[in-house]
Length: 377
Image (cartoon, rainbow, N blue to C red; front, side, top):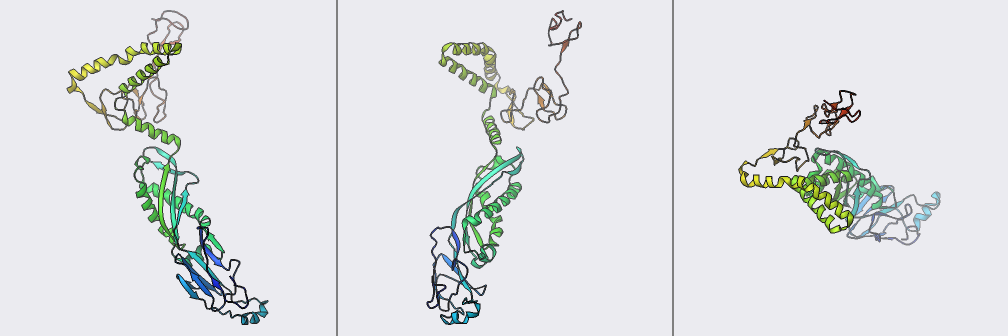
């Protein structure tokens, strides 16, 4: 570049060969004795800032410019003898790349906590991409780059990524109630999040050109719960669904052949009367008394379900009331010791029959004691 020669004037220009440099300084190693009359060439996608005597003197737009400093060829070297032949009139030029830097990645290093209105506390991972560009060259140099000889996207990407994730955490807590509302809202959320980040980027002389959210994913167990809920919403008649699955299993067993297939087919055949015994009655009731078919409301999710449903096809709540939790009113399965909703011990215990001879507890309906063998009652 000729920034330290004695006689010749400098011709300063810079090309970004990597496509990742936001800023580049000439001379590359420290400052130099840029002389009066040096030529500066700035490209359309660049801006240049001249620092002279430690201060930013001027910013240059695209074109060719003549620099004016106190360094005169030959004479400056003679006058700088007291300083070891080094002129104290130091100068340097910073080239700033104004193009858009695309495809910078952001994402959560650690899952962020989100309190879902329906699923409870969930830890989410989010990822996306963003584009940046420099809009205030002098502000960018003074606040972010400083005196560095070059500054790349890799050096600023990690910090900006953390800023985006921090704003995303606050944003989700304010505008999103449940993960079930996420589909179809990525563009809307990205635009709103971009508006929140304008100030964080502008104070460094940067502009957030675009921001995209590519994924927001909960843990695998939460994804499985969402999938199960979707399946339940599709299944309108749980009884017929179970019968269909049993028939399919029987068909597969018959196709398998062999002793195992024959044994499984025999077992399923014995179960058929119990599984399909109510189909004729259900069909007759549908034909003869269709007008009497009614719907009811699930007490757990408040969805409309068939009146004869044993389980809610939307949330799986048991509709056949055997007994309920004394704490929260949840319908309990036979023999349940603890409530699946609140975890409290159930107030009702399975009934037992005590032997009058030895006091051993036996199942209800027993005629003889399992311990002493004597007749009960």
